[in-house]
Length: 193
Image (cartoon, rainbow, N blue to C red; front, side):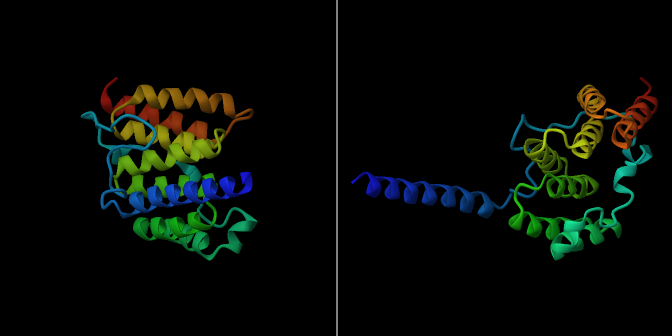
């Protein structure tokens, strides 16, 4: 009798989870929502500086296949290729397919967030960066990119917190720390702080 209850409970839990997933995927605004799933509403402040003048992170400059396992997933490879050519929508589509096969890959979430940020869709970008950090709290690129997204929103204090986190993560000098520090300096210079 206990086995039957356990099986029934597992079936009910599976139906509940799949129902929630189906609801989220079918919601028409899930890709362009301005509310990240793990925080408060994203309300952009009025930045006084133009974001095009900030340096783009150098860690995304080389989007060649940087991991051997990337060769095993054609969607991941296509996503990297799309990033390299500036096809942000193509990158999102390819990486989302790769994420279906590898939902615990923080790199994929970071790349999706980066593509959304380049499309100036900060809500989804921040949501994906936060998901990457939930999957891997030591993901240096996600810290850097989330900090840059906060600068776009006019929130340099949050970017500064992420820079402090990067300082603790980088035991030796790392590009992510240098890039975010450079972006914060450029933001402050352009904003007149």
